Amino acid sequence: MKFSDRMSRLGTESAFEVLARARALERQGREIVHLEIGEPDFDTPAHIKEAAKRALDAGATHYGPSAGLPELREAIAAHVSQTRGIPVSPEEVVVTPGAKPIMFFTILALVNRGDEVIYPNPGFPIYESVITFVGGVPVPIPLREETGFGFDLALFEQKVSERTRLIIINSPQNPTGGVLEKDQIQRIAELAQRHRIAVLSDEIYRYFLYEGEFASIASLPGMKEHAIILDGFSKAYAMTGWRLGYGVMPVPLAEHVTRLVVNSASCTATFVQLAGLAALQGDQTPVARMVAEFKRRRDLIVDGLNKLPGVSCRSPRGAFYAFPNVSALGRPAGEIADLLLNEAGVAALPGTAFGQHGEGYLRLSYANSEANLKKALDRMRPVFERLAR
Image (cartoon, rainbow, N blue to C red; front, top):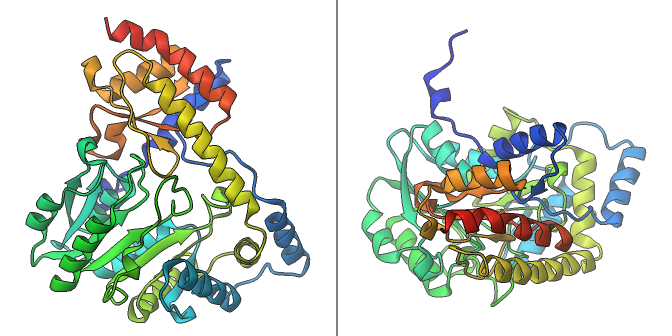
């Protein structure tokens, strides 16, 4: 079987590769503390599951509109209007099986071969993977610890060119937990409007902001016609396995993205969409409770990491990842992550899983219990003590 050349350009998500290796060790009888997967360890709230059960019993098991059920699109439009302070119509909303398709379909719809796409590095690995897959040119902007993992604006301004077709931003950010400041977002918006460049704003971690107020680039004057909001239900409502996401974008792009849905998934499962409707319109207490718990865990793991030899860790302002600096140990991040898995039974990701500028860092998801986080810190200590000698 001969494969197309484009398949050689398609990357993967290392978290799932490390998870597979960790599961293999578990099958051998090893106990592994999982800090590799960005998945809330909370159960989906009961009222959301009940809504899905009612929908199944009522026969919501058939095809639905490719852009999403009208009632869910209306609810999303109202939710985004309220949370971002901008008018949004249902026609600007496309519902997809998870939020990743919004990323994939936006890049497919906007980027031709040779077009440049600016994106954060270290960043979610699928950005670069899909850019390369469609024949675009990835233009990474380093996120540096000394600037709070925000955009290097001077370099960003240098990199914007007549070939730039899309800018991708993510705040709060995976893997660093960094948050773009309002002045950074403002400058990105100014350049996007001046050069008429679309901006894909990945806001999947919007709820997980521990200090300050959330700012969306779509809320800035003049950005409505340039911005695409990516959001979903996986993180905020602990619905990762349900696969439910959405995008908010100008109507012409929404029409193209809907055609891509028609040609791929046909539609998103109807009973899942009705569960999403219950999530948006129901009790938000479980979300607030989960975010408060993640903030407590953040403080625990950051404090513990900073007590380990050769490790320093900034306190992330958002998401649920710690991004400790381990460069003082003088070993590649990938090697350190392997040692932690094989010797300490702690599954973590090297920063390089998120791009070349992630070297010298590890990413640890603190979406795990307090007991397991303490266990992971205890297990990591002997490894770091040995490496720091």
